[in-house]
Length: 217
Image (cartoon, rainbow, N blue to C red; front, side, top):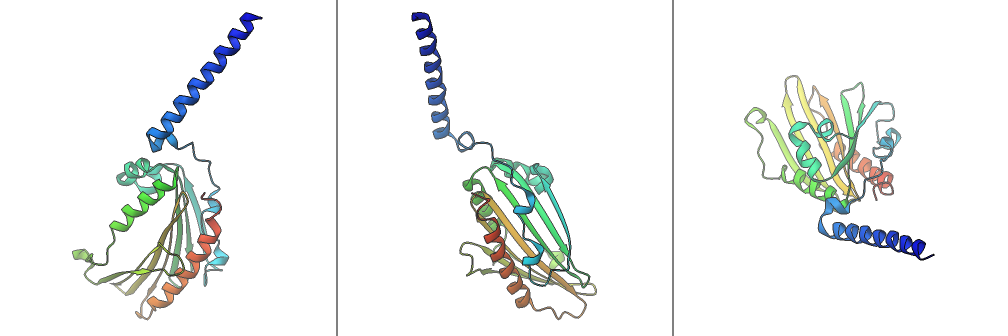
């Protein structure tokens, strides 16, 4: 009876010791504190085609990965891994009339990791940034997204051989996810309304936020 009681006490003691180590680890580092992130179905991270105005008939392709290098490219893999990258998804939309869009998501182990990645991305695009020498015909601007506080909107037009390329994108975070929606169109007549693209992007990203808010916790 005494031997059995001693064994039970040893097991309980070991459990208490391991629990104490776990608590100390959680307090010490975010990486240690973050439990392995449960994988989210890729389709739950991107915008459904039916919810993007004007793209109901678009051809759609969805890709996903758990590799930071595959998602962001080797130059960005280190930063993504540092922030706790867990998985990524990219959905592309293509219309015959030179209109295109993409919805992508990066999932991190913690919300703090997603916010840090968003801050790093935002710092690369400032209203004062000037086009590269090879892109002197480009104009770039940022804008606020009233429907989605904290989001960053960016618009760009660029003259290219044969016409004008116009793009609008919006990035934001919710929970553990960093998300982006980009809308673009190429026109040979330079008649694309950047405001119309912006309205489409805002409508789409508002729907995207509703779509992902419960899976990115």
